[in-house]
Length: 121
Length: 108
Image (cartoon, rainbow over all chains, first blue to last red):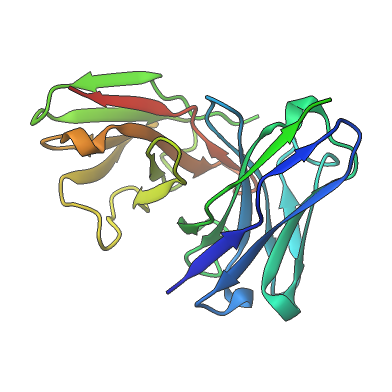
């Protein structure tokens, strides 16, 4: 069974750094892209960026370029999303998902359960 | 930047047909994908490549495209279909993926 398991909820203060994770199982990690998606409370989905674990090729939405960093650790089949300095506006649930195939434009067929990040002083 | 436009809400009675639209200039050339998201849950893929249904998705879910509009149709909507539905596609250059704003489907 293909699974994407995300790290737990986080409560942080503005200015702090954070790295959340998405560990996959049930398929070959390097054969699909991993996408990160933001969902602010009561709002829609926002495409943040995507990474190919095979060679770490990464693409960011213009809205998120320079605001976050996406990375992977192939040795433990895990993708990461990190911030160097959080803002209150980063409060959201973050989802990872995989592409069905190695094609970057393919569908997102399996999703993680989401990580809720709250940034508040 | 590229945008996909969905109606904020659609409401139908149980057994009726629900149609949720998604408009975008690149849709004639790029696939549309649809995701169902129930309250407090992660999204689930219900339609891929405009009109294909993943295994396990009920036959009442179907997709179509015409020009710059993609449509998700739920034939004989049921109460358990009440959810937010999000369309997803790529801009004309194929570089950036975008989600629509989401449509809240009410079945009552």
